[in-house]
Image (cartoon, one colour):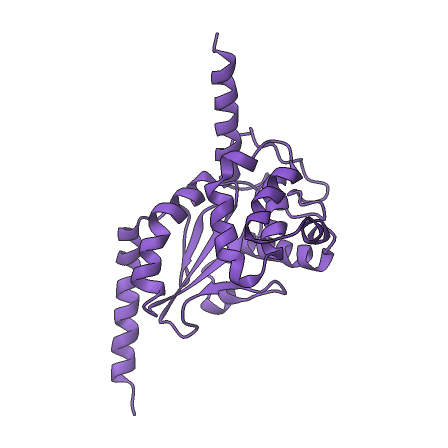
Length: 250
């Protein structure tokens, strides 16, 4: 028989890992799960698609990928950068945490800060806890979004659990100056919640099945990308754009 502490550790790991695949929408309580659908079970094996399948846009165009709803896009880098990368992320996903900690800083220095890539982070909350944290994240000041996003990922062990613990989530949000009154008011902002739900449902329509998923321009990649893999996909696109611009009539 396993030691109780070992079982607890395995349970916590399962809760974190399960945050990287799933379905459903966002409710006013921050819960993920479409009305009438089976409740989200963080310990269940991840599914790549719901029973019976779903509608997905085949071969989406750039316009399809870039279509935005009412929730402001969290974008970084030059608006006219030659390449756009879109990442779908869940705050409870350990793979998103690893990507943000180990790979994103290199990507930012080499491509975003140099004007080569426009990077868009789209919220794809999976599970009740991720939904509640995502609502708080979107209530932070825009200039604090990336900082709070990284803080939620870095401090996952402090607030991620099978049941939603709002006090733990607030303690993370408070680190960027959010008051409890602001935090509580966020959960009543139905227009914002509807906007976030649209982002997730639109992602599902584009073929996103979990996190992290990436669009490199119009190519959907459903795995954690290394810096080398990103470079291998992005560099030819940048070169193509440069060649096209050089050959354009003046």
